[in-house]
Amino acid sequence: MYPGKWAAIAPERPAIIMTDSGDRLTYAELEEQSARFATWLHEQGLRRGDTVALLATNSVEHYVVYWAVMRSGLYLTAINFHLLPAEVSYILKDCGAKILVASADLADLATEALAQAPAVQKALAYKGSIEGFEDLHAVIAASENDPPADDRAGRTMLYSSGTTGRPKGVRHPLSEESVKTDGDGSLKNLSPIYGFDENTRYLSPAPLYHAAPLRYTAQIQVQGGTVYAMPKFDAEEALRLIDEHKITHSQWVPTMFVRMLKLDPDVRAKYDVSSMQTAIHAAAPCPVDVKRAMIDWWGPVIWEYYAGSESNGSALINTEQWLAKPGSVGKAAVGVLHVCDEDGNELPPGEVGKVYFEQQSGMPFEYYGDPEKTAASRHPQHANWSAIGDLGYLDEDGYLFLAERQSFVIISGGVNIYPQEVEDAITMHPLVQDVAVIGVNHPEMGEEVKAVVQLAPGVPATEETREQLMEHLRGQLAKYKLPRSIDFVDELPRTPTGKLRKHQIRATYES
Image (tube, rainbow, N blue to C red; front, side, top):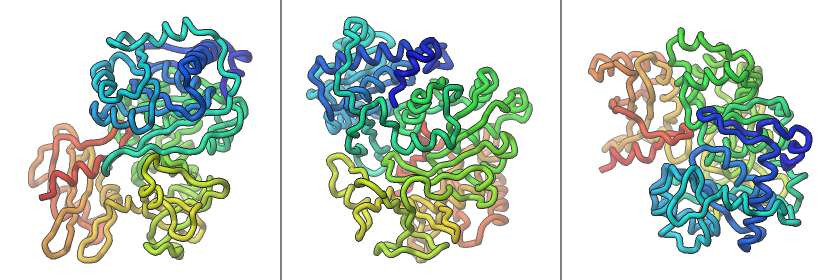
């Protein structure tokens, strides 16, 4: 359902507020500006299935562009602004973008990338000017409020993080339904479960080029709530915003939980978080100790889901279920879960294998322009079963427990070791700020376990510190899982959405 109905019901209600600047768009403004921009896009010759690219830091304009694309039957490719110009230009060319919209605070990146993507027909800028780019707001103001009559819904076409090789666009077929009646797939069904409605005040602390923040905030607008978008995550500022705006719903990644939990207790106690009704988390496995601490602090409001940008299925678990099944990411909410061995045979409860979702209607996603990667994601016998590379197991009640990304499993002496288990055992240690566990080459065992640790501020990188951490781990893990070495680094590389860049870390140890 397109949020335009709220322009009639509650025209002055804010659809989006930026928490740093106070910039906002009411539903009336969102409706008018997106309609005018949709008109302009149609006048430029864009038709159903064409692509608009957005390269921008978080802003209210995200939603003008998003909803103009959705009501025009186009694809929107939001691009990670932390990429290099050549990486951005690759995405612009690969997705076939005809229009680029960029925020002027990314002028150098946008200009360099555009110079290498000649097929882009026009480029627009806002938050200031970029040489050679038209002004987005001037274009909107000069356009008629006469969007295309064909209002079949568009979709996002977002790109994988590209940790192995080039990023790939995740493309789904367009809907034949009107944008006014077509919700965002599984989110349409999850909204009542999470309690999204016109009274929702939703805090989004993550970059909006990422699938979950973009799609979830848009769904809040479908329901008529208000999105509070942070320019970037800051642990104490997030708590302050919850208190000040009486935030009812939010979405996080585990790294954010860790950063908030590691604030001084007196700082945490300054802020009232009792308004929170639903706090959703995803994107990476959450250590059991971290989640238990969040539940103790925020109460039984924590929901977790497991899904990917590929939207091939999802699992869901609430607080009560998680307390009964600590470490689980839930039961299937969309699709049917299967865990299979390397030959595609289903495994019994408790055995680790590749996680597949069976799609019950239609066919799964495709990786745009990469039939080999698309084929590799499919089950060898079932074309409507797809996987995104995670390993895990189902228990006897059908709850899914993740083990690790397949590419990160450490095989030492023929035995599988799952780095996430080791990371979970050390993450909340008071000496540790962040940790990554990887496998490094060993002449006899094949691989051995190495922990790479970012120490908490003020903690010395000494042998005594290293031994304290090892002593802690000896009480948590079987001997064969223990790190054979611990290295200290100033900072671990993470994406802005909280995912460790493990391929980058491992590359520093390859010879």
